[in-house]
Image (cartoon, rainbow, N blue to C red):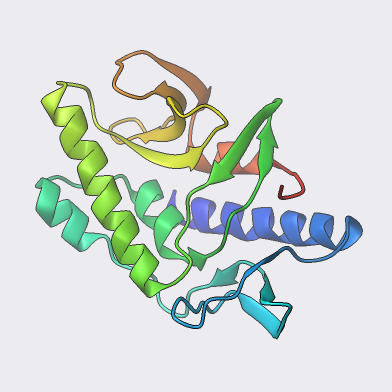
Amino acid sequence: MSNQVVSAMSELFVRWMRYQRQSGGLPRRSFDAEWRSPCEVGDVWDQQISWQPVARPEAGSMANVESGLEMTLHEDLVNYFGHWYAGALAFSFKGLRVEPVLAWNAADFERLQENLIGHALMQRRLRLRPTFFLAATRSDSHVISLDNASGEVCYERLGREQHQRLAPNLATFLARLEPLRNE
């Protein structure tokens, strides 16, 4: 499945880039000289810089997350977080606004891993099965998550056992995302 997720991510970013070009160009964000990213494109203009998703030269390891949680992460999760850097992206999944959580740079990748561990520990405390967030939604109480046991992608209410299955696997979910203009 890992190659399917990496391929689906690549195809998703091709669709996203095509959409951005057709709807006004690459997004811009505030430039921060202390928080640089390989995603940055071009020159700083009016304290803003354009950016685009970038494949990592080497896949990022999630071994410290697995070690910290004493569990094996689903291979799709490892491939989702480990192969790209990106800023805030917006997509639609059957009318639901979805904003994938991806690292901006290597330091952000470390922070992301800490957040994944914190999320998993909260679930353990609540005696919930392990899921890991993939994307934010407009609701602060709901996320898009990956069920670590089955690999299914779910719409999850934080702190609750009930989940709505969105896709049988991550590659299928990614293939169904439609790019939106960033707000």
